[in-house]
Image (cartoon, rainbow, N blue to C red):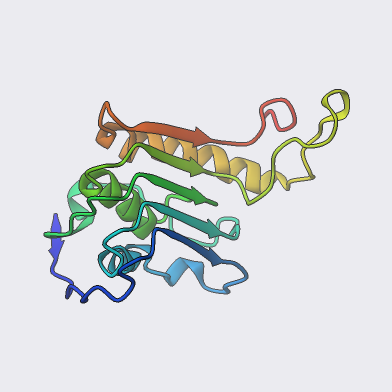
Amino acid sequence: MQIINAPVTSSKFRHLKILIIYLLGLHSHRDYDYLSLVSLFDASPLLERFVLFVSPVQSKYDWFEGDLSSLRQMSEHRHHNLKNVKISGFCPQKSMVELARHILENATSLECLTLDTTPTSYRCSGDILARKCPPLETAYIRDAYKSILAVRTYIEGKVNSTVKLNLLGPCSRCYAL
């Protein structure tokens, strides 16, 4: 297991309670280090809610498969006020798995972690009788199910009994494989 000592920033966003980040349209998700977002948590000591939207990358990243000891950890980073975290477009890229595990290990007030394995806004909408999800490519559906398996393998075991884990996948009514 690799321990990382990242410099702790002074509180630059002292009053920030909600942080929403959109990483949409990036050409190189595969190289983005999602664990680096922890520095924003450190700079926001009152942060209560964190939402990350990641655009779909459709198999353009390396799936994390392997030994948990190869995952990095950030030492001495506690996030005492972080209660609610949502990651839309969750994929089992190594640094994203590391981020989710870091949150579970260090957000001492965490109440809810939502990992949505589908692209943003792919839920049934419309009136009750005609609800239908927007079209979604088969590759995205397949990747979403692989992502669910990765969450169950590498993240679920880290969830404390006081934390509600919402694991969202493709709509089973519209996208059955």
